[in-house]
Image (cartoon, rainbow, N blue to C red; front, side):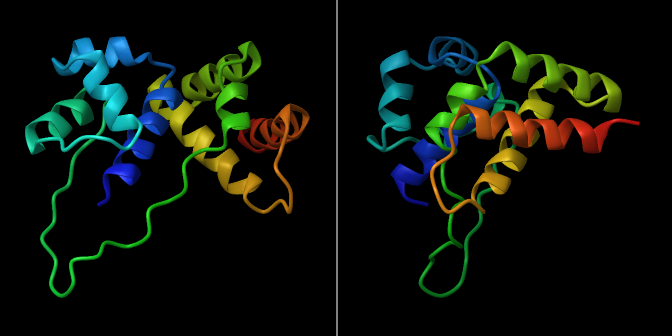
Length: 147
């Protein structure tokens, strides 16, 4: 995996969980500048550092040796900035908490699932989406999860 792709994944998971770099740094035992550099596609992290970051983010780490040229499958694109901004809204937080409570899923996990589902829906659009679009996509998710 390229460092740029790792950085995008780290930032995506962190923001989906509503966490700051400082809170992740404290949990992972790493410095804020170190994590900021990784998220910006710079650095050469050790396996131990990535493992600590994964644990701090509530994620697992899978290391795989592959045959051939070693290229991994394509990494999903990072979440759109407009969606990340929307994910900080009170409405998004309220709906994610309600969905988590209704399913017994941890709230951070539900936030991440919801963000990625919304990003998937947004990827069907022929244009960049704005806040009103994200509200409509969230409406669809809310309606489909109601009992």
